[in-house]
Amino acid sequence: MSSELNILALYGLYTALVLLAQVTGAMGQAGMGYLLPSRDEHRTLTGITGRLDRALANSVIAMALFAPAVLVLALKDDFGTGTLTAAQAFLVARVLYVPAYGLGLTGVRTLLWLVGFAATVVLYLIALMAG
Image (tube, rainbow, N blue to C red; front, side):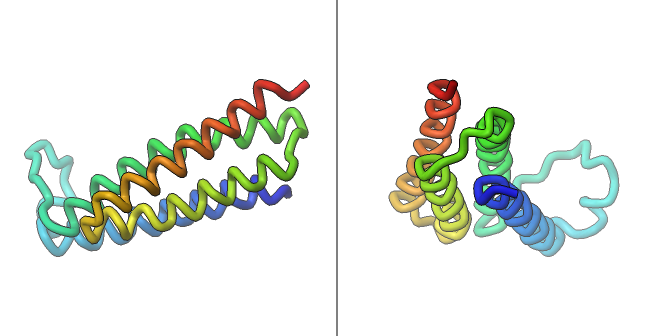
């Protein structure tokens, strides 16, 4: 398995851990009585739990954009130094993004989001330019 595919797998695992942290926080804030049924009644999570909830949603969107780029590159067998660097930049930025969001570090969070997004765009551009 290529390093880029390993990075994709690592990010999937990291997102699962963020989900676990978010559910744990939501359980403490809203209780199991709210989390177990269908949750037709919406409750707004607050504080770090609310920020973690939003960071999780953003992480899933980032995964939805990142994964196809890596998979297209894998299908084209077009991994190289540029794709590895972009995938590494994505992973580092996204791993740091969640705690920055959770701690309310707005400027840092935005910069990390931009790095992860730009790395994803670079992967798509490389995939489109590949033969």
